[in-house]
Image 1: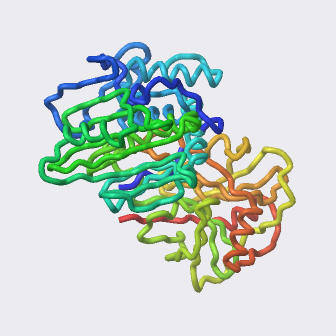
Image 2 (image 1 turned 180 degrees about the vertical axis):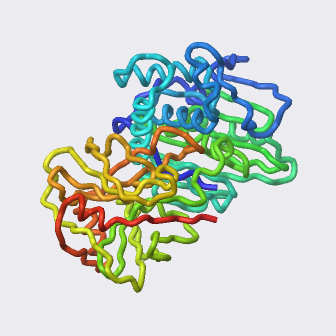
Length: 465
């Protein structure tokens, strides 16, 4: 199971900085003792999907009939923007609603506690920008069997460490480490006590303990630390996050998400709350580049595909991709009379764009008609986001010239029927040219305009098993 990369605000996110555990506990939990939170729960295991019903009142009634995946997605995005500091579990209590109001206030919207479609879209866009800024990605840790969400730009280096894996920055300002303990006499309680004592310079400030997991946070030397560990079948799997206090403007918010996203065993973490995040069959758009069958599309669209097809043309082979730009290059063979797009461009004249793509068949009664929509370029984002199916679509500037390719950043927490639409961006033509040069592909030339672009786009179909 994979959470796809997805949907920040400024380069640093300012959060209140008491203790990190306060960012990750239920808002109504009472302190048994200063610095210690204890829960006596008979029920074990991860929260079930039918649990976590929203609290009524204060706007919460508007969340009662919302799918769990979308409630979790809102909390997930609010955590990335620095407005939500609780457990990401879909429970919309007073604290979650207050986080929505805080986001609305900061964004200049009316503080209703519920999100209108345009507000939800802006929240998703800001969350997506935050994730991209730190390089958020879910990865499988082969050493422990856990799944971990990582800010890959903060921790680009990976090494084996003890029973797990360590990811770190160049100078060690940020470190993320997994561990796995399965030995005689080891219990969640014994591991908790060990984690409190080791290393010796660790000063635990707060503790959250439940039957099946614990969380610790505090200071380790001059760094902040956060530990989360779970037990199942006499095995403890955990995650440790360590970072300089100078990085807390970014890492406090990231740690909130990492804690909830951590999936030590199957059926745990955010993935268990939302189910499979990618559709088995996904539709998008491709741009024909050469008469010999080169097709450009969105890398995320064709990620994890067992079969890639170009509608009406047959199977396609993925021959190259670029994670940094979001581009993927496909090839279909033995097809005459393809009409390539003209990658002629001298620079966009203003923010106005015309998007040329093929909407999802569910949105057009099973058809595959090419449509155009108007949009604006706001920084690196396209507003409003186009319909599903426009991943890989052509973007034309105000003069009808090819500006770039549309990318749809599939939300990490996209559930069935969830709204809003995924945030959209555009890969400019200069980046496309450099990508193609690296693959020794020379795009064709031709005429500009929407009619020409319509003739050069095709539907791309990804089939996942």
